[in-house]
Amino acid sequence: MSAELKLASPSAATAEVPGARRDATAFQPGPRPHAAAHTPQKASRFSRRRLLGWALFALLPLALFAGADWYVTGGQVVSTDDAYVQADTVGISTDISGTVQSVEVTDNQQVSAGQILYRLDPKQFQIALDNAKASLTQVALNIQSMRQDYQRMLSDVDSQQAKVDLDQATYNRYAALVRSDAVSRENYDQARFTLDADKSKLKSLQQQAQVQLARLDGNPDIPVEHHPAYIQAQSQVDEAQRQLDHTVVKAPFAGIVTNVPSIAPGKYLAASATAFYLVDTDHLWVEATPKETELTYVRPGQPSTVTVDTYPGVQWHGIVESISPAAAQQFALLPAQNTSGNWVKVVQRIDMRVRIDASDKKLPPLRAGMSAEVSVDTAHTRGLPHFLTTLFGGADKAA
Image 1: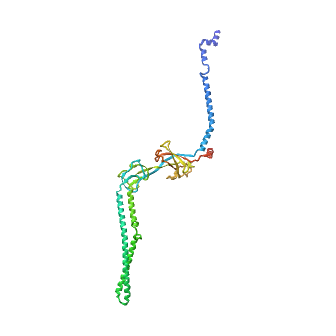
Image 2: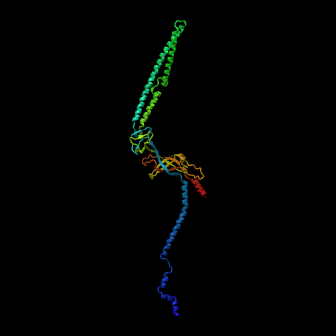
Image 3: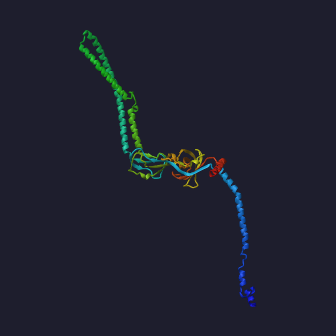
């Protein structure tokens, strides 16, 4: 009985199972390694976060004030990237038909105003000019002949008038003698018929002289070069000369020719057919299409700055030259008709033309079609009323 009691006692159990105490002690909870070292770092990190939060909270009014100041004092510069460089571009052509004789330029060549671009075969036009000049000479001779014929007709009229006067005197004499039978009735009748015939002839000569005078434009001493027939013939000579001159096609302004290989010697060009193109390099502008809401304070004459995507960091200066009187959709083939019940308001775009100064040869060359960005200084800030209207108006709409 005493032996059983000994076995039940804790000391006995411990004695019979060696290491049991050590195991129980090993599983008892205790402090983690380095716990004392991590506690100050956590406190320091928490303190820094609190300071950062308070700093951000203190800077929030300053940020709001700075943002409000930027909005109120800003807005005087209107910018749009919907812009492209434009230049005068003309299709080189002539109003006569002919065969290309020679091409005097090459593709993408810089040309000056008045420089010869290409030539047409001038042979047929030279023949037409020679024919017109011959006709002009013939007209001049005809006018001189008409002037001489008119003088001859006047002489004939004077001669016939003298003959009529003689016939009249003979008739008067016979009329006085026939009463006394001094002359026969036959001679009297002959004198009367002769007088009437010569008067008719005189009248005919006078009418012919009047017709000839009318052909001389009513002036018997009219200069040849003032006669209508001569002026008409001279105009035909001028037209023939003009067509001959147009066989030599020259540049209307300075620029760069392009698409020159589209023609070659021997090719037939119809009248007004485009041979190639000439692009102006001196007169350049930017065609921008800003939104209608951006043009509130934009006016012609305001300074502007232009940047081109091709040349980052380079600026051109210019002014607003003009603003279109209508939105772009007004010129569309089929303008939008918002008459249905599901109408949606769309912000329109209005063309704006900006003239740029490209006289500085140090700047890189601009070419038509380049993408650009335009900034216009309107000298008008948004102001506090606009800010308040936007702020509270937006709040009302949101509500």
